[in-house]
Image (cartoon, rainbow, N blue to C red; front, side, top):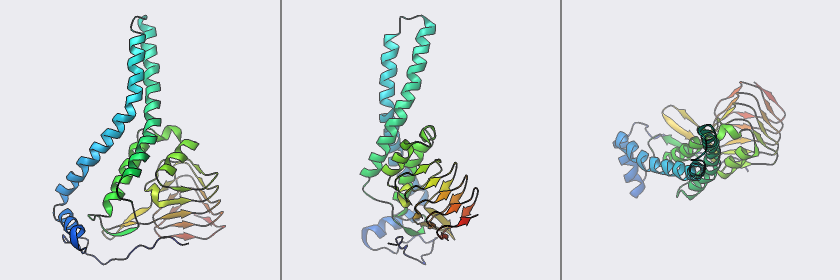
Length: 255
């Protein structure tokens, strides 16, 4: 089965009027006409969601710190502060592991899903894409590096919607749009490789799936952009760049 088709559109990227009918069209027209205000209104609930995720994830570590602080308050200062330092470090790990569960749960509970799309950035289909990546980046930039590459980062991406086969190794956190990415069995993603299921072109936002088939290898710092397909047992060399819609056949050395 091939990748989902992206509906082509000639819609003017600067227009303030949506081509959709009904309530969707009305809200999308408002989104485009009042772009700054609309963006701020979107950020407000998203900020609440992100702050809530971080706060909930910090709670176990804060509980541990408060308990250790109370239990060691009468100790000699060197031992007391050593205990607090260890509690803080352990609390950070507890935060990270909790966040890796909380964020995918919130992502799953969202009432909308990211779908292939081509159209103006200020469109309703772009909102789920924006939120999905905001949640992903929250984990990426506060903790994920410390568990990469391990089965834990693979589990996180799987919970965020990435289709992952068996024996996959992901040695990078530079991944956007995990729900638009499919990795076959025994795929290896090299250190600092960049994979994302979107790109911008001629004023349009394009959200397109990425498929990397069984046994493929993505080299160090290589880039794989939206709409790309990598065939079985193909080797993408270090620092290579697969531009949007690139199709690399099986058993190739690319780059």
